[in-house]
Amino acid sequence: MKQSRTHTCGELRLEHVGQTVTLAGFMENVREVGQNFAFVILRDFYGTTQLVVETEEMMTIIKGINKESTIQVTGVVRERSSKNPNLPTGDIEVVPTRIEVLGRCRYNELPFQINRSREADESLRLKYRYLDLRNPAVKKNIILRCQVVAAIRAAMMDQGFLEITTPILTASSPEGARDYLVPARKHPGKFYALPQAPQQFKQLLMTSGFDKYFQIAPCFRDEDARGDRSPGEFYQLDMEMSFATQDDVFGVLEEVFPPIFAKYGTYNRASSAPFPRIGFTEAMEKYGSDKPDLRIDLTVTDVTDLLSDCGFEAFAGGTVKAIPVSDFTATRKQIDKLCADVEVQAGNKAYWFKLDEKGELAGGIAKFLGEKKDALVERLGLAPNTFVGLTCGKKAAAQKTAGVLRSKLGALCPNHMDKEQYAFCWIVDFPMYEIGEESGELEFCHNPFSMPNGGAEILDKAIKGEIDPLSITAFQYDLVCNGVELSSGAVRNHDPEIMIKAFNLVRLGEEDVKKKFPAMYNAFCYGAPPHAGIAPGIDRMVMLLAGEESIREIIPFPMNKNAQDLMMGAPSFVEQKQLDELNIMVTKKEEETAE
Image (tube, rainbow, N blue to C red; front, top):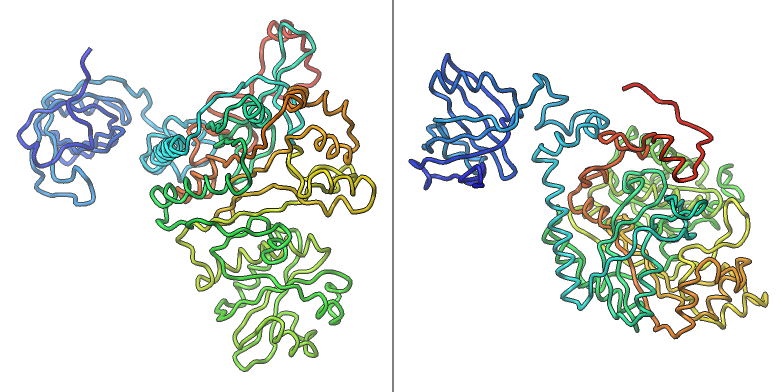
């Protein structure tokens, strides 16, 4: 069977004038300008071509075709009298001699105008995603995704990594989020789980003697959606290295990522190696966030000792953080909106004052700070026309609010944000443990398989009560770009004895570890090499490169915020026969809603 076209709709140029060609694509638009005269736009994956209908026969055919039908057109290429310099095919047009309908659109009205689908309601876009993807502006993000994944694969293989796929059906494991469970028909009462990440498998590959592994890995987590996180499933560049240190992992990504970001990104500048390394504690103190946007030159200063007793009630007994902003030009209306937006996002209020052009305190809470002026000027290095944003509360709340305030101040003040670049940094030395919000007891803060800084000795001291377990840091690290956490990674705890000690602190003994992680524990007992890895998120990376605010814009078939696939109707009810085969009884059903 021969291909149904000689050229694509993005291919024809002046050198093709006079040739008879065959095109195929979607009939995007028809503009009639006379009884037997019309301009038709034909679109395929590669671009658009203008057709000019000039005969009664061709006009009759075109009038009988709904927009977005797929058609095959044979005709003669000629030079356009009125050229379109904004279109690659804008110098030519095709006069059809034959038009055949290949796939008829049977609806006179479309759910939305294809070229303006991004303006439509998101639910409508997701329900008719196959139409939404016909929009070139939507399609280009999926093309970008393909290009980026191909570039990553090539770069990783150049670094000597092997791409190895790991199982999708596996055992449920405590990874920090809810599992998606799959009932095992042949094993009543038992379940598989979809992997939250290939964490254990990639570590087992290291114990198997594979030196460098990577995979564009699908991961499944039953968690709520966010702007930078899709519910249900996502993809990551999963990698692991044997006989490797933290520096080895950093070296790989610092070589792989900058060229890809510079080539495919909205901005053509990306950090070069080595990326800045910032300790977790420093990041929280200096930027109010463990994912700081280094495009912003503003920093946070602790002024608790100066302002906790200034007479302003909100500051009493709490931590107070300050962010000075020089050459501040925002209006009072903008300041009020800034503070309101911070409170909505952080759940905590922000306050402010200014050092005006005359060097006097003004605005906001300035009336409480008169006696503190000289100390504030010295501590914060204030010059006339400087705005100071303030946050307060318990330490964690004051830090978090300062981080939100800093980000919004950067967006408000272009002189303090070099926006058009990709600014990478590593956040290192994360706490090994934390107090759980729900349990109120000691829990792992990040990955339970991470090696603690100090190894067995530091854990022994914590077990004996000689040090606070909360003071233990781990060889855990995050890669951050423009305020977005791209990935987490760690040097792994490959020693069973050290692993048991780490779990003892969270009230789990050796038998618990063997039961929860049998394959990994047993494998490590056969002699495991030191190893380390990381897993940057593909979806977040492409979102950054495309300059999109929502991760759904770079996923071919995304779910909505409620983890529903509106196009396929998932999740859906199943027949009782299927439930019986799986020994499942449904105790509660969601009410069916009419479309």
